[in-house]
Length: 283
Image 1 (spheres, rainbow, N blue to C red):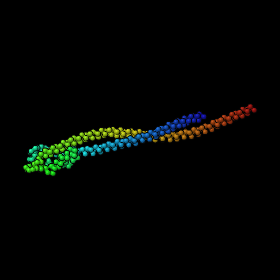
Image 2: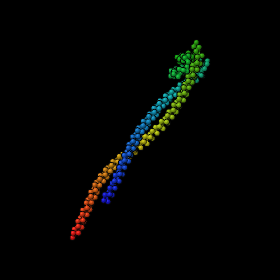
Image 3: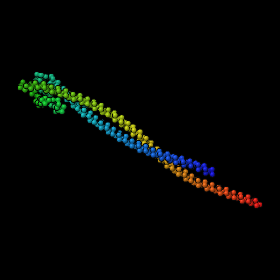
Image 4: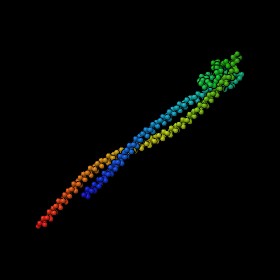
């Protein structure tokens, strides 16, 4: 009877503990499963945001590279034009006024060539700079520069006063290009500053996004590992519970039979003792 009671108490407690553990593990599995789904969603959202920020940075970088290439080309072109016009202005400046008539042939040809090239190459810049009359005069000069700087005393010297206008046009063109170059350089500096600000902001956002993904990916791995272990534990606990319940059932059955057998023996012994007493009394 003592053995039966001891084992009964132990198994009953073991079964109660197992049921409580199963309930706790079930709750944890639900918690881990929900957290895993939440983390997976958050990681996907962070990845989308990261890709969006990276795409924006890549796009801004491509635009900045295109802007810089265009600026470098424009700056190089304007510097060359300014240098050529400066040389032309310097040449004419040395032969200003009446001395225009003594301008060397090669200098005259060089000035005309420079003016022709700049008029063709930068017509969009000069459209609002030169008046129609100045444009006609410049085109007339490049077609027949000798009419303006002819050393021979002919009627063509009547064009000589217009030589000063050619000088003014060249100087005006040079100043226009210099002004345009200055504006382009300022715009380039502003574009570079805007890009650097954008890049810095996007890099901060990208770094933060990567940190979130890394952190939550680690948390997800830990959560899934705990979930998997909890599922193994609950199966083991259920198996142990089943074994304990079966053992307790058999224990109760066995102990119940043992108690009955003991009672029967006690009853039989009592009857035997009564029979003996009666026999002795007869004797």
